[in-house]
Image (cartoon, rainbow, N blue to C red; front, side, top):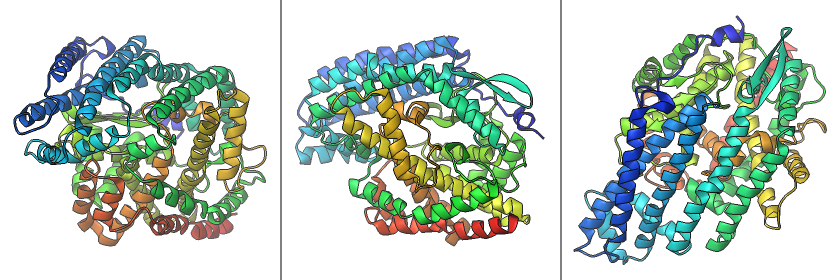
Length: 605
């Protein structure tokens, strides 16, 4: 069965149950106008609020924070909807317009958040404690305390207001422009004697083909496509970084990594400990790649070989087979999670159809306002694609666990956002591996696990190194497009443990990877590696304790929006993330698959 036939019956999602009519939805238009009206009213209310917190003003502030929280949830709901519209059809110009309008709403909301920050940082500790421990706000105490702490690191409120307002038509607009360029790119691709036009999202799936000529063609077409847009991408990246660095300078933030650390709720010591442990994985990674090269019959390992399948790679799943497999495996751990996953699939919360015009990649978006989620991917039928489906369904379960919390207790950091998704991947692969009797299938599954580690230890580390180097140079002025290529290759040479050939790098990766251009999440790289290793620790605990761990797992996910990453790990795992020990053990656990892989590779040559 060909991948195209396997994926032809992959589902499209149901967005009409959220707002009928797509980008022309009158219900959405009314919802958005109500938000706009309520935003205006709350801005007026905020200007008249008492500036001093005491026993007489506490109730007023409680009511204001509750209204603000409701607005945050509704704006997130609107933003998630239009984000899904743009992703399902990048040519939907009305949806792009709506996305711009939600950016304006978010900017207005930012003013309210800045107002809250300005108020919070100036209140006496005793009065602040009474506010955040009140019955109506105690569930969101962590969030409010965090707002207060971060406010003390920012500019005066009037400057923060201005920055938020300017960001709409500048900073965030660059991100929207990149998304449009990304979505519009098409390439001519030849397979089985037929030439068709593919989006870059569809092209990415070709990188996992067992046919090296197809992988090479996909890579060359990707480079060719981004070469035609490199000047624009360079302008966008430099402009976004310039905005950030100017803002950081005004806030007196010495490092561009401070913002992502705050967003991820981790300490710099934790990040450094993780990367140090990852660096030490080099010998095991090299051993894995050398064995894989022999299986592939190649002398040089190149960028497009990263996800090249080995072993029983010809197995193609229909979407139904993939969904049934995932649900069955989840049931071995948690009946509740399996039931939820089946419900999400049956209710068409999943968009997986392989078609041109969709956004690339995969994501999950929460609609907390109506207690639903949606996920998007392009299902190709390979086991890698099954893994992506399991991954995004894990995100959906995480949303489900916290759906009844107040909005401000549902905002978890990216470092912990990958816990449930990667847990699902581990469970899927290990369960299938344990039942496999064919050595070739075992080889494929072990390769799947190690290929993920290779990307998260090397590919993601290269992105972090690039971001760090780029921001260092950007402080001194615009970084030319040619220099961006050089920085990217230098970063890949440092991160890939000498596994890529001299002519096997991807100079334009800085342009082709949309994560570099996201304005909401700078340094969108290390959270994936963090999540991979942390989820591995959680998964190992689940293997030790069996189904009895399911309730503890739920409790861990439930706390992800209520404390720092270090505190979640300490409370539920009993580990200190600032120490290298946890990360070294996690890396070693991943690399324990190298020896079995090498042995099977030797037997299958």
